[in-house]
Length: 76
Image (cartoon, rainbow, N blue to C red; front, side, top):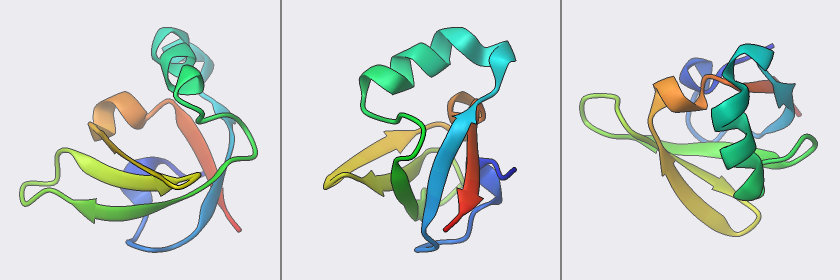
């Protein structure tokens, strides 16, 4: 499984699930549409690496990598 911080730019991945230890923030991401099976890609990193911008379902979202660590991803 990959984490968001492991991705390279513009490589398509899909969400396979969530890390059970980060369940509070995982619920918040699910309400934003980041549910298992959703394809996404990393658009860019900020100059110092935090935050990162992702693109999914026609939407761009900026997240801190530490907050997005609960996402479990795999390459498509």
